[in-house]
Image 1 (tube, rainbow, N blue to C red):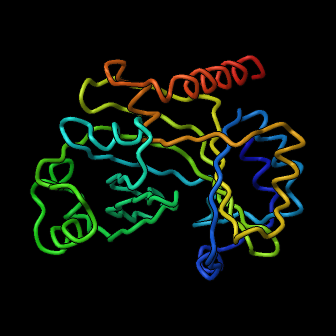
Image 2: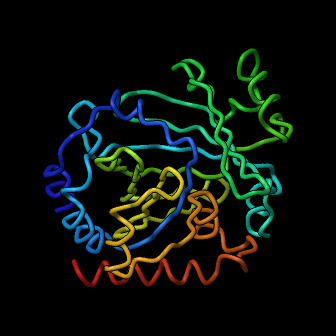
Length: 262
């Protein structure tokens, strides 16, 4: 159903997407069920174009996160600290591209992402890559990461499928992630978020947004969702979760509603 709907959107190429610069970007996340997402996309079809890469509009992604043995990056987020970081390897499965990425959220709640491409040989070193790194990787981590990369360990893996939309005025992008699943590297626990959809709206300042009115109409409200933190919390009950508990309950309700509607 989802794939059929997204095929009805006009296409936009990756090259066209790369020319769209959102210089004063604001990011807002929303979480809903896949059935509700289908309703949203039906309503938004005339206002947006769908990114198409090698004929795909639902693109597979894979991610591996690293943290300290004490899970310091997770704890910083759980405790509500700003000026925090995450380290991951992000793989664009269809295109075969891989990046080492450092994400930093500053004291103004702005997210900054720095990344470097990885070769196939460099990728083959992971999950031990961060500890064993040298040369360009070593220099990149020393420059961008506040942690000693030599002590970091792989903690969480995820995979998902992403739809990317851009509005006709080219003032905003939407990324929509579904089929999200986690594997915890510490205890081997897994969790599939079947029926869940994570929407992230990235727009240029306060430009008018066609999707915001539709989200309001369908009562889809802003909802924080860190893939790393939610994945860790859902797969490791020994971790502190106080800040995330209400969010986790809300996600469980959305997943349950999606199962009923299928």
